[in-house]
Length: 209
Image (cartoon, rainbow, N blue to C red; front, side, top):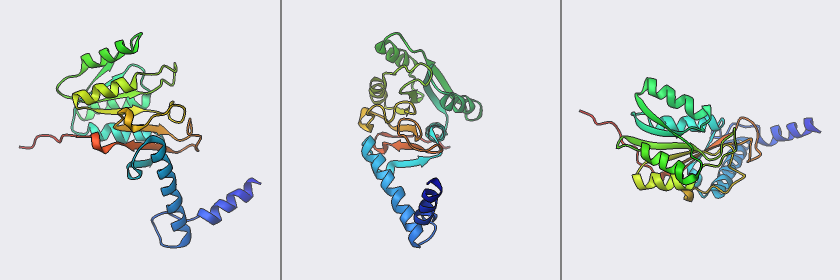
């Protein structure tokens, strides 16, 4: 039964990974690495560029705050979850971040054009959901990724509603792909992934006197 399963897991994986050299600790470390490998294969990433997070909100906060820590301008869509909207608003108050909200058009080409019009020399990134959690609207994420690449800016994607349901390899143009474990990936609550394509990322530091 369930109690027996819990005891089996405890007896097999009841150690803290990376905190000791005994068998249980090593076994958990190996299991974690295996899952990171599997996630990397699923999204076309390098294993070392797959990080576990507490959830998608955590992953998005890490990506957004990492890219925008020195200020600058970013663009989000009008379909963003609070996991994006709230940290962006907070950064505008604490870090001087400027942001614009791109309107979702009736067509994908109109949506992309609405983003393009908002790009300025200060723009560091676009952060956009792949699929809306409210309407299910699929955003033109590949076209937005191409737009980011053309302008040398970073693309952060919220894949919480889409990862596991759509094929979303990093080769689609994602710099940061953030997702939850408990939705389309059928994992447990309290898990998330931050998947990174470091080869496409350049984050400039502030000019120092």
